Structure formats: structure tokens, C-alpha cells
Amino acid sequence: DAGVTQSPTHLIKTRGQQVTLRCSPKSGHDTVSWYQQALGQGPQFIFQYYEEEERQRGNFPDRFSGHQFPNYSSELNVNALLLGDSALYLCASSTGVTYGYTFGSGTRLTVV
Amino acid sequence: SQQGEEDPQALSIQEGENATMNCSYKTSINNLQWYRQNSGRGLVHLILIRSNEREKHSGRLRVTLDTSKKSSSLLITASRAADTASYFCATDGRLRGSGNTGKLIFGQGTTLQVKP
Image 1 (spheres, rainbow over the protein chains, first blue to last red):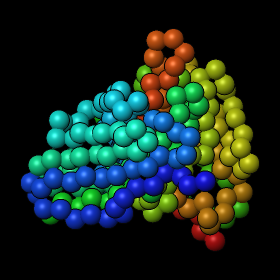
Image 2: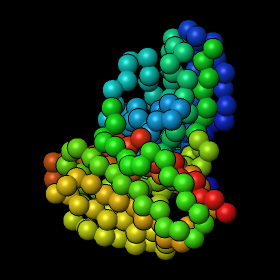
Image 3: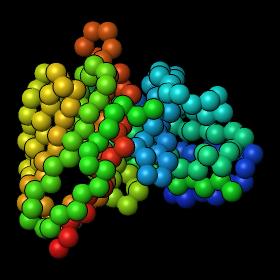
Image 4: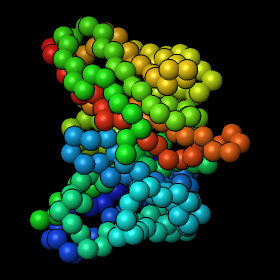
């Protein structure tokens, strides 16, 4: 049973560019959440998708947007990249009726 | 912003010793969870304790929760070199009714080094 799959593993982008990160949730999970983890910090909640809609959002600018597809997979898009967007981006999946979350291994984004 | 603080920020012990990490939080919660992270990779869920529980065990892990003090502790007994990692507590807030928010708020983490 595959867990949460994220792609790509590593990514280097130039300031001002746009990036798309992808996440496939664990089988049976219908909710996807995205987190940003800066070096040496705990993860910070970006947003959560359920039934193809953004259900909750953290304190992130509109440059961060997302999408959930009918198969529950999800994308995180970041526009107009800043150096400060360099971080590990984590995807977590869950179901609406169970507690606990399954995290992917993350995408390491470096903005130069 | 982070929910609260974890203490200590770093901990170094010998194999076989016990490791205790503490976590404080600020708001009402539905549950509190502990995660492990190896070398900046994905988070591994260790244990979840609900707001109406005071103590929970899982193998060598023991978690306590004191909602009156808004604090939790994670005890790892008989530590092993493989336990070397960063440990994070995360709270899941409370919405109207009994549902959780689905939004985890993490602490800054404790970096544990277990020397063989």
C-alpha cells in the first residue's frame, strides 16, 4: 500500500519563476494538506483541500495556490518565487473520519 | 506562527538512556500528535493523544497531556542510535462540535542525538 507520494524530490528555480509541486495521497485518503518547512523550523500549514475545494488556509499570500483533482491528488503552485520560498514542502493526507496524518517525503525547493 | 515551544531544543544522550521532550501550546485542542523527522525528510506519525486522555503508550513511547497547563511530554525509553532524529509536537485545534480543524500547528522541534 503506497503512502503519500510527492514529486519532484528536489527543485531549483530562479527568483520570479513559477513552480508546481505534486502530491498523491495515501490510498483511501481524501484530504490533502500542504505545509512549508523552513530550515530549522517546524512545518507551517499552507492550505488543505477536500472534495476539490480549499477548505482551510494558513497565513500565506495569494502567490500560493493549489488544486485537488477528482482522484484526490493535489498540486501546489507558487508564483513569483522569492528567495524566502526556499524550503521543504510537505504534503499530508488524511480522511475526514480518522485522526492522524500521513506525510510524504517532501519536495526540497531552492530559489536562487 | 508556531503554536508554542518545545523544550529542550537539542538533547544528546547515550544509547539505553531515556529521552524526555516537552511541548507547550496556546489554544484549545482536539488532539495532540507527535512526529519524528529524519534528516529533513518527511514526518513520521508516532502517536496521537486526544484532549480527554492524560497518558498514552506505544512501544517504547509514552506521551502525557495536561490540558490545564497546555503542555505535553514525550518519553522515549531505552533509546537506540536509530532514534536520532528531530521530534515535533503538533496540535489539531477544535472546531464547533466535535470535529478537528484538520490544520496541524507544529512546535519548533527537539533534535535528539543518541550516541552508541
